Image 1 (cartoon, rainbow, N blue to C red):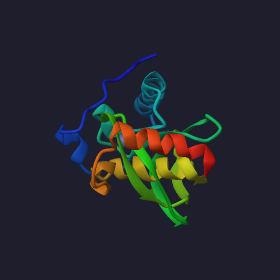
Image 2: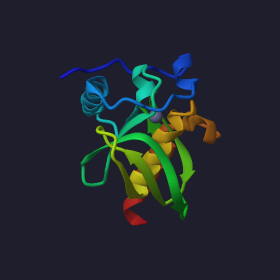
Image 3: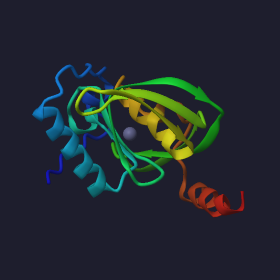
Length: 164
Ligand code: ZN
């Protein structure tokens, strides 16, 4: 088990465009294993390679069945609907902001051995696909918000969630 340090907002690594993975070797597998451990330790929903300082197009996403998806060279192939909800990021610790994302997102990606596959995600998984893939082009969710949520706003949102 290897936990990597998570890069925090302000570090130029988070603003870089990442390069595609071309070699599906032991080094990639080590990166994916470490990203899984790091995400689990941080109790996050997703993690992109630049967040651990690696400028390659690799993300891991916890789906709605708590299965960890490994996406290498992911791209969004279709999206539909719209959802607005609070979003956070392990690189922007302790903060949240309201972000509008598509409700359903289909991604195409390679697995750790290089095989292409497609995967559809809804709601939180769709949000996570968008959030993590943006990281690979040097973007953070904070670019979509007008302010960080206050304690009161967070309580209001999470308090109302069940009644919706
Ligand atoms: Zn993030």
